[in-house]
Image (cartoon, rainbow, N blue to C red; front, side, top):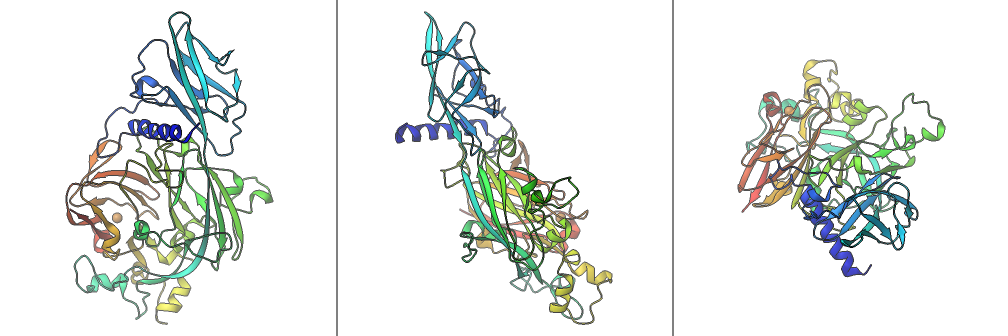
Length: 481
Ligand SMILES: [Cu+2]
């Protein structure tokens, strides 16, 4: 296949998936259709003598019909041996399908798909139509992550940015230290990304992700890919990396419990200080966007040695999976139909239930601290968005342009108090085809919403639970004309 042909096919894949993933751009509500039914793909295959559907039997995979071309792309997992695959397909009645001179029997005939194959749909004396079948294995995406102890400031400006005024007495409950209270700087452990497995050079956080605050780096993949997390624990306690959504074996789950596995499948569970482990996660179709989703979705990863305490320490981050064909290129996995993305975690981080509570008392509170008092424990419940309270997330990192299609990936984390209802002033969005300007989150909810930005200005964004507003779960975003 020449490169021009590749580019044509890629653009057509993108167009096809854009048609299927039509929840974007504030639209929503349209029927998305089955992905292996060409009559739903917008391609106008209405003649009777057709290849009607195409997939693979083992591994199971669905073909994507490219509108306007008799081409079908079948994404399969990274590492799949495509040299002998059996196709499943349906065709119009009284039709015979050939590859070369070999009659094709669905569910039986094997072919080598290492190159595109032409399927000829033939009805003697009536029609002859060729379809190009492209089986496309995913790519390997390697990441080098370390967990490290650091100091994190929930309010680095030292003021309430929303009011533009110094903290009130009520706000100082969460932000002022001394007199037996820790304040707004805490020892935590966070995930950081490195350039390679020497773990000597930290990767810069790109401008578009500076709003992530204390969240770990973004993991990206496309359906079909394999993710490898080369993990080094540079922190002072044993931690792990546990993913949501993707496919993992027992050696890559990152969670210790009585699961009947042997020592080789336990090494991922708990990585000691200074230890390393490589987590391998596949991204099959079931880890990608579903029928009601747009072209990408959010999953979460976090340490799961002691899930509550590891979380409150700060070891969690986002993972974004893009639909096949919707990535901008093989190395730029941002969804093609989206101008800008934001990830937000609404979370009352309970620093009382962190591994480092005693360290934080020793570091920041005086000897008069009383860990059992209601006032003390309340002061350590940090009502943050990505680890920022009272609008302390820099506005330049929360800026978009009018007219953009902005995708917000929002999530909550934490405890029974983490019932959040983020509300965006000034603009509306759709979620699963429904129009709204706020959305409900429970602990570990992961929701992807589509905002067609049409209203310039500096706008408030806050959890709508009154107690949470007062405690600092409030920020701003900016739309420039
Ligand atoms: Cu809330």
